[in-house]
Image (cartoon, rainbow, N blue to C red; front, top):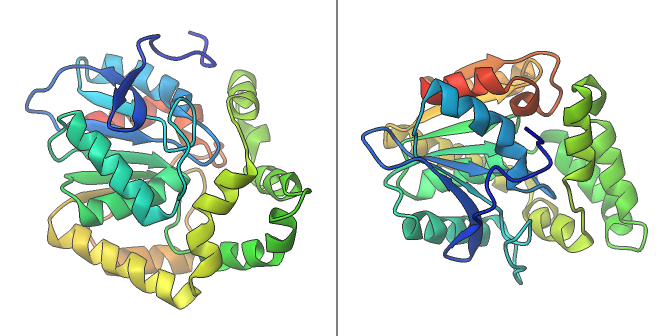
Length: 267
């Protein structure tokens, strides 16, 4: 299979979001997949291939986030607005209380979604939801990010994602199946740039409390061991959290270990 291509040529639209739809509804929780910033739904091709083996016929819908892939641009990419668009698409697709699977930015959006809308669980692929030092890095880079040399900021982010650890074909996918644009970076990082760190931490703590209160599951998949302070926070706000580390995969464990990720989803 060529992972640069779509799993199917039959692009659908649910609400305002382009999607690939797989499987049929049954008693298994449907799966919703959200990719990371600047990427698109092609990122999930390997996992879907393995899921078809591990859990045949499972209902799954893979969305392009607003402004990505085949989904139209929007005036706002703030988290609350994007999550609202995703919820409209999930509803239009007829998905009942899905498990939301998100990589990177998609993992943060999946968390916010599950806190605010009906969901049975979250699978967060390599996205700490506390901003930590990342917000400080963005604030220092903001003048460049808003100027003509904005791509320097994105390139510096890529340099820290350990792409060199990935198999050659996956490296090609990561480097080519992406459309970095200044409006996406400024729009999707808008909350981080405009909101104090303490307020953001409070919002994410509240989200975890809401997820726990509704009895939804939460599984964090990482390419590296979680920072001790972050893991301590995560287990304090969500004691039932499951954490899986898939080493040697950098920021892309779903691409390097798709069978393991599919097994988690099928479990």
